[in-house]
Image (cartoon, rainbow, N blue to C red; front, side, top):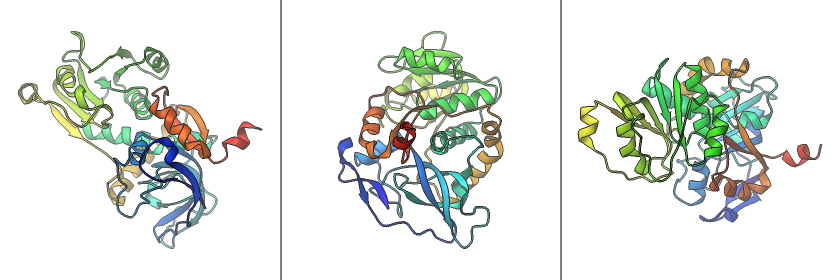
Length: 329
């Protein structure tokens, strides 16, 4: 089969389409013929050699979310059959024509959706949903989302609004904030440099979902309301920050870190099952729809990575094995 491989750690041009052996699904796995894949920041970090794949996952084939058609199923898989349309959460290896996926990490694609829409859901929306579940976001609470126009940021806005929360969001680009008003953002906040809340935002947020990390932590402590919850989901702004533990104690704050990739299949399966019960119906009735900023041919993976690194996108970036044919139709 064809796959996009990291030929060596480095720039986007190290991504090459090449031929690799087809994966063989285990008894509890499904072989998915991939039609489209989502592009994530984790893919870029893996390409740079800064985010190694877990054991048993292809070290040189990125990709954490995909959509396609079930090609074959393992002997102990009962729910899925050949020909089913599915979207999948993976620990890696999605940049390929075929991927072996634990059956518990598959979701059905809502009727009428394209594969490109479906590929924008698993990693982004499961990450967002899991974060909100961990901090127990409730109706009428005030939620602050950093990097609100990212794929996970958009998902957080959608899911917070579905819960009846009020959502503020930060971005360094005013045009992105304007676009996010149409996605349900209540309060746009332009930032430059490190996040520093103004007087109105001090003690404002019941929940802070931080996709930046680094120097945003001091501002988060100021913006958090007493007994507020801060969950760190991404580290695009760096891994180190100064923590004012006195402020943490006085406000009785909760500080949580989270990631999906290195969790067990069993834990991911439980998350997917809950997501299927709680969130999938919202997709099916059209209450929530993923935002796809741009679709690239998978042969242009290097260009897709450069576009993500340019920070111009709103929502998800997707690559398709069949984009060239559809563009010409």
